[in-house]
Length: 262
Image 1: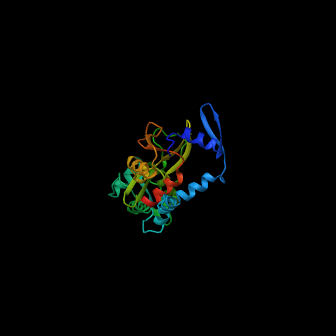
Image 2 (image 1 turned 30 degrees about the vertical axis):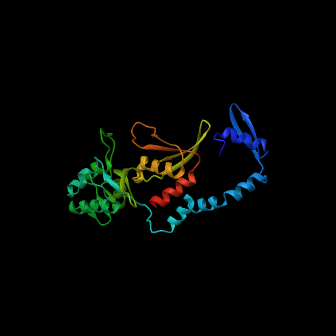
Image 3 (image 1 turned 90 degrees about the horizontal axis):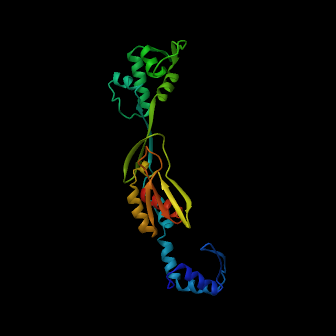
């Protein structure tokens, strides 16, 4: 626009009766737009070619094209790590006590231990002192009247094992590689808000997918021609970052992530 400033542009449009505006405390709000005004018809004719070219290269169109490509969707796998309770179980079976195991592999370690110690009786497991310590007893002092069963079904012992393992999630993104983090899987969160007089789009949990926040910010800054700000996520025990973009651009962000990472 030749007006350079949005205030001057709105004032010209108001005088031409294209729009109606109100101003409160220095904030100008558009209350009405006359879509039948001749100015819109003139702009449509003038920029018809540019609009068509822009629509062909829009993020949404690129995202749709990417959806039909061979880009694989992220692979999400839940794995389990021994805690100080269950480390002796894995160590006794010659396994890495600090390793990450699928639930199937962790269950096999438990069954192999029970077979080695001759604790299996059909579908039941004799609860030895070692099993009770690893899977049943809590750390610290025990209540005097606390008692435990002598046997339990193997499925129950499996539940006890899972309760004393630490859940981790591995997410393998095409072109990025696998990223493993403590806890259940999380989604990339995109939220909209206001900051002063500006619309803001916030994006978090990118690190869980191995995505570099600064790199993503640079890509979106060029792609969407918007201001980008990166700040620390709230909380003392996190190193994750929050990516903020000027404007409500959630659809463009979603299309970019799908086209870039699957």
